[in-house]
Amino acid sequence: MASVTLKNIKKVYPFNGDDAKKNKKKKGEEPKKTNLQITDEGVVAVQAFNLDIQDKEFIVLVGPSGCGKSTTLRMIAGLEDITDGELYIGDRLVNDVAPKDRDIAMVFQNYALYPHMTVYDNMAFALKLRHESKEEIDRKVKEAAEILDITQYLGRKPKAMSGGQRQRVAIGRAIVRNPQVMLMDEPLSNLDAKLRNQMRAEIIKLRQRINTTFIYVTHDQTEAMTLGDRIVIMKDGFIQQIGTPQEVFNHPYNLFVAGFIGTPQMNMFDAKLVKKDGKYAVEVGGLSVTLSDEKQEKLAKNNVAEQDVVLGVRPEHIELAQEGIDAKVDVSEMMGSSVHLHVTAMDRDVVLVVSTMNMTGAEVSALTAGTSVKFNFAGHVCHVFNKETGVNLEA
Image 1: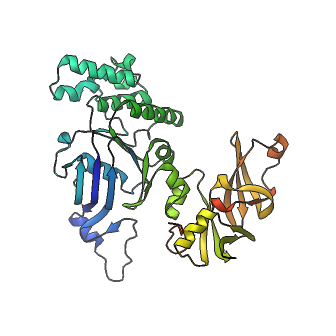
Image 2: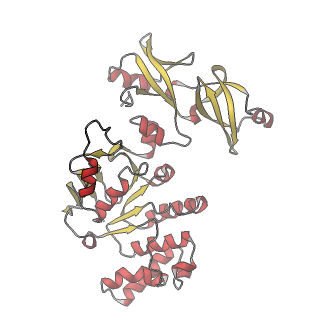
Image 3: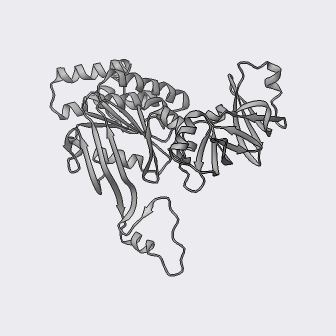
């Protein structure tokens, strides 16, 4: 097995002749709006990408469509050339090494199975190309099939199988090769919600049974939070934050990470950070909340001044109360153990996740559209961001 190191990786898609002409700004013409940087070389899809992946670690690259995560994965696989930077698998520089010689395996979102072959032959194909013995091929295929619970399908062809079964076959085809690194590019995106949940659990169990390094790409932050040892959050070709699921949830580096991680997403308020009796507090909607000791320490260490801020509070950290910020319920969604309340407060939409564990049926039923409520929150759940840069003031 192997570690993977990416040092200052950059990927530029060069313009062809027509693109270059289109990109030249005519006099008085507005520049073309894009989230990705455009240079004279072309469109910069990934840049300044630095990451050390430990042996047997499960890393998840996550971000919105077009952020560069799949491009990064394809560069690791050797399917895309690296414009600049260095890529190491183990101690070997592999920038110019062919994909077949990198000792990696890749699972795609569209399965990429050979439709004319049986499941057995699909899984055995790469081993036959290596000229392994029939006995060894048979052993590896059957062992992988048992791990993935697809032994009964070995004689079938892909068209006779469900999406979840086909994805198991695609994963099985990858693990029979015993690769140093397993790459997975949105492997669950074509499955329905129930199957995605099942397959997530299967991938977690698989990870425990095979000793390999996983690099997994998804736009689904639930997958990222449940699968990854560490998460790499990307936007517009840049890394925004790297950390464990708990770290990025509890300590988002900036507004983008705060809004991207968490479902429902974090509520944002215009607020003021003030100092009262030497302690930091946030003032919002007539409410003054003193921050926790941990936050006091971090803000003081950064010598943060009083200022207008963006205050972030997660829906599950907001509580209904007798005193607090006035709100009116717009939509009430019963989710079983909790109610998701969409309310209007301070002329903006706010979402509250209210636990029903200690509420009577009548209290829950009373939370209907048009109901007036009040809410507040504690100081340890507040996140304060610089209004100009969007960076967490505790960072």
